[in-house]
Image (cartoon, rainbow, N blue to C red; front, top):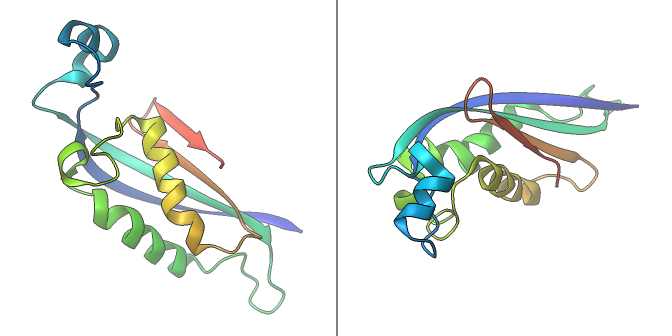
Length: 135
């Protein structure tokens, strides 16, 4: 029996979408307000989903407290109230789009989880804009 468990967390971060290989005009045309040289912020909502078999001894797919602690260490402590472009190694040379952020978050979590668990990350940049990454 496969069951999916989910943990949602929240963090605030600033970023600037910018391609250094492009001139200012092209960056503005492609990224618009998100290319503000003074950065801009979002209130991100992150949902991490683990799908696996229920352990007959515990009744868990995965201990939700352990999942919360893992997200705190690997994501929240690194990104919450930070400028993603300036304050993090993850995005110093990677455009911090929601798509890239979801992939990086997935990559940060994956090594800490059993291979038998399917991992999925959903990152909401706004209430209406979100991305999913399933690895």
